[in-house]
Length: 133
Image 1 (cartoon, rainbow, N blue to C red):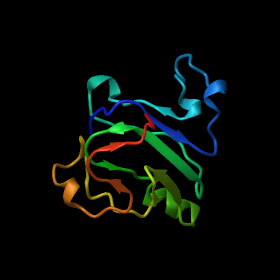
Image 2 (spheres, rainbow, N blue to C red; image 1 turned 120 degrees about the horizontal axis):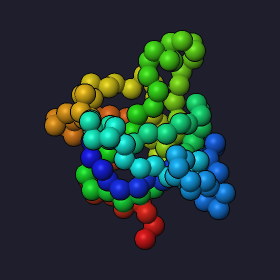
Image 3 (cartoon, rainbow, N blue to C red; image 1 turned 90 degrees about the horizontal axis):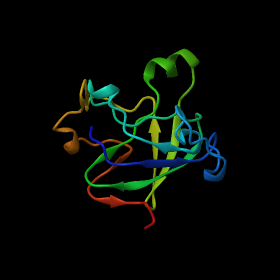
Image 4 (cartoon, one colour; image 1 turned 180 degrees about the horizontal axis):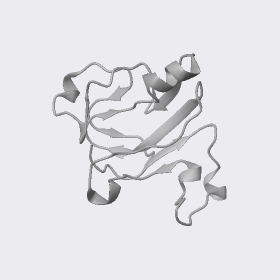
């Protein structure tokens, strides 16, 4: 996982850009502004935010390379006893990210080098620019 700049997500649970809280520690996260998290340089973590099960979100940003979206995990899905998924829209594409999606591509330091060859339900391959500019 590497820093691909800011990524935006919009949908249920997020406020408008005009209403966002820019102060620390929020830094616009309430409006869906996502920034790379690296645990103070100790690991490569990536990006993350909260989302409501069954909801639809739009993702935008500018990046080069493959991007994989994942949502929740099988343990939580089992605890709640129902399927967990969200719908994501990006660059004219739509996909569902599910708690039951395979995570074999994940390593302690992010996706393995071979991850780009795997078939995953919610993946962007190659260069994307969904920033609208």
